[in-house]
Amino acid sequence: MTSLHKRGPSLARRHDRGFTLVEALVALLVLSVGLLGIAALYVETLRASRMSLYRTQAVNFATDLADRMRANRLPTTAYNCGSPCVPASGGNPVAIADLTDWMGRIGATLPGGTANVTFVAGTATTPDAYLIRVRWTEVEQANPVDFQLRVEI
View 1 (cartoon, helix red, strand yellow):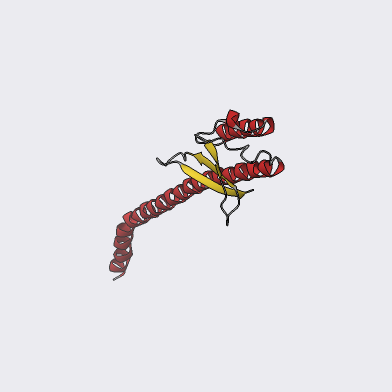
View 2 (tube, rainbow, N blue to C red):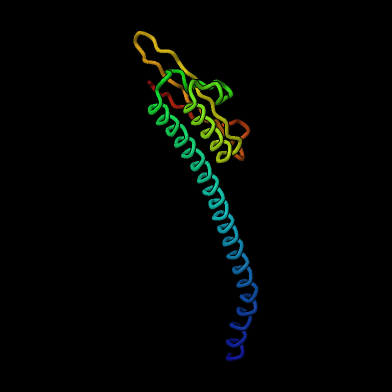
């Protein structure tokens, strides 16, 4: 009877040896899938962060030019550079210098960065205004992204 008792556990141990290896392989597979998910999430976070940076810079550029326009109001159409923006079409030397500097910084900072400024004459119910438009190309998008700001003078 003792010999049967000794044989039972040894047979069970033989069957269990391969099972721990399968458990380890499944755990490694689950860990690998989890790490790939974390890596994909990290890449997506970097992409969203880059897009957010470009949008913030575009807003800053538009508000910077709006502040320059408020400081240099004469003539009223001084910053009307058209589309595409030609700084030399500005109304006075200060506006030309502002537009030249502004366009240079946009082109150097934003990927494929361009901009234009259009003067919109006011009516009896609305004041004169400028429409500032900053445009750039995102790395993974086919269509350019743009930000528009209306500045009433």
